[in-house]
Length: 194
Image (cartoon, rainbow, N blue to C red; front, side, top):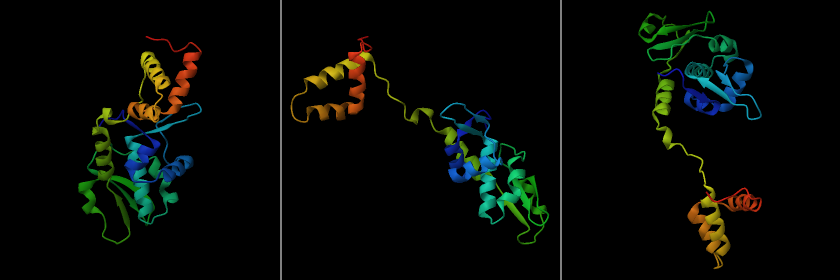
């Protein structure tokens, strides 16, 4: 599993099976720390795979009925492997937690409610699906050449039949705001043919 991949906060929450609101709350509490934060007005947090696994663990803990606040800090700092074959085990009677190999689960006591176990396999499968998606499937921002902009502006100005201007915008997948910006650039002399 590549360790260099990082996920935006909404992606990390979706992959871990928690809400963005929960992620944001846990991040503000310091339980889940983003691996990278960009500075500036559009501040973005990104999370590595280990943080996504910890997010899934906290979500599982909450769904199991345990007090997340009692285990939040320790779970957020837990060293988790970024692979399958392990589980996170919380012991409710002693308020301790550990990471174990999945095959060692049979050694746990049989007292009902004494242990809560989180298997990160679902989170890892979600991450693998996300990573295996072809990056080209994601929508890309369209780029327009100056020649294209001028040609569309000229055709728009020449359209006189009823509905012809709307038809042009639909055909080209444009909005009137495109034309307003392009016209201003053209009048300012910033839109020259290539």
